[in-house]
Length: 241
Image 1 (cartoon, rainbow, N blue to C red):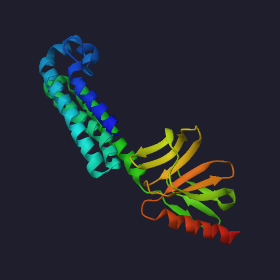
Image 2: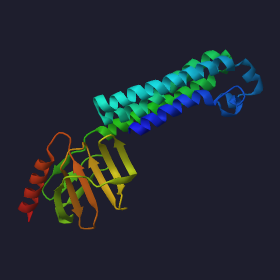
Image 3: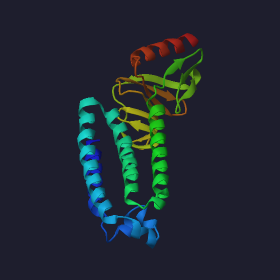
Image 4: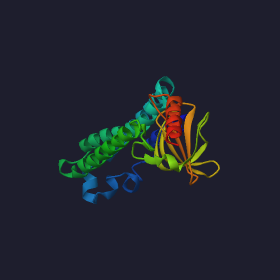
């Protein structure tokens, strides 16, 4: 994740130098869609000066805060920061850009702010749902994993159940949620095998359920010990058989 933080920080800082007065009508969002008479009312030179300072500030603070959160707090908080901070910053940029426009040309600024704010709410919602603990509930003849990627598994569908010291090395997320040590959904291993991860926390050892159809589900709780869940599940399956 550190490399991602550094790479994005460099990208944000570089954006301030990418757009100039010569290429603004092609590259600067909002300005490139203005009519010629609207561009004449827009203080491009002053805005580009602010635009450069904004991106230098964004890049430097993104780097410093991102690395601090990663090492001083945890990887999950750093992941939230990586997603939320840039959107929040660009809302500020959109708000400040209206001062460089003629009062009659500010509708596009408000439209941009609405889009960015909607995106921020959407991203925040994803994190709220994704970071909520998906618990495993053991009932009479089945185990139920709660959450958006959860499922019901009949005891009769389970081929094997064991505790493992390491989760399989993952190459790609095909459909799911990831934030630091929280991983939920469908992933592919380095060997190309499709697996389901419900890892509320990177607590090891974790539980591996192999179904009779060959599918593997890896589960790790956040508050409860994985060993306790494993023992309760084994005892329940044995009592049913």
